[in-house]
Length: 440
Image (cartoon, rainbow, N blue to C red):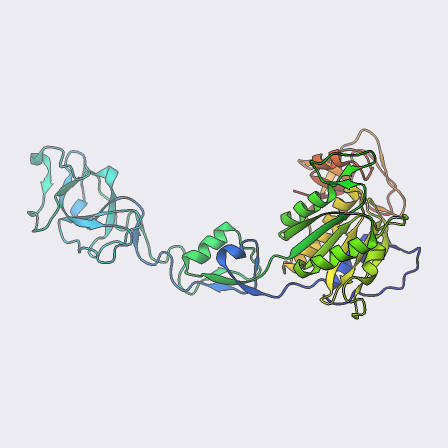
């Protein structure tokens, strides 16, 4: 991570959302590529094109259980006048040597088995008597007598054209084709393709390791008893889940008490497994906001370029923010506010793009759209602040849920979108068109 750009800012300066995000994206760099085994590469981003070394399928093979035959031998076959062929053997999937199918002969073939030499098409078993020899012999169009070693006869009741039910060699991909392009996120289908073309490992940018810490002496772990004045720690769970949803390997650290020394030691302990650190709480101007104090001397405080800057942003919710790097490896850290809605909105705007930048992705942001605002009366917004309201989006319309309060967790859980009210807008009338960030 390179040093954050410096700006001429005073204590009372309000950063815009765009300025803060630009600083983050200018300093967070994609992780170095590594070679990983296929299953370990799930969710990672390819750093190079993958070329197919062999065609898929690698040989002509049957798409049905049935009989491999010559086209001329079953021409005109019908229920009344079936073609009776000598079965000379079986062809199973994975079988190396196959029998040669000559005139008047058939080879029983399984799905995926190679088309044997001499055969031109495959007749599904449903178009035959299954080799049971049912039907009056006098009405069959019999061929030559069975050769030595034959395994019976089969009556074919329907004709098939050349290469019917045959999957051609290279019909999926051909040797030399590009299987996957650099920049592809590896999901289960892509992992399957890599395995199918014989790749055991692949070169990718690893999923970033994100450590999430929440701060506050009032926080209690879910499942424990609440004493007066305490609340359950929800932020660390929400943000860890959000980091995993963004593609990271995320670790949640239990709530840290409001003690700068304890917080500093906890952060230093986590540096060894973090490509990105996220804290929540303790970034405003209260007497017990210890994150600022703790981060002043984390790791190698004399390392050039290290340090976290705390800012006021022209946004609601989420005005107090911190960003910088800490420790000898300049590990990026984003310090988010402690109110649940503020921390989650901040994650979506700043942390999620940073995670995707570490992954080497080009598309960093949630999709946005325009929607009609469905409200009974005008919405108000503070002058000079970009407001992000929670909402539900359906068919080009968006409806706010909950109020503007940054503590309304229940309303946040119902939202699937953020309604964006620009800094220069103080009132939005019902039916107005607004920008919407789609969250899911």
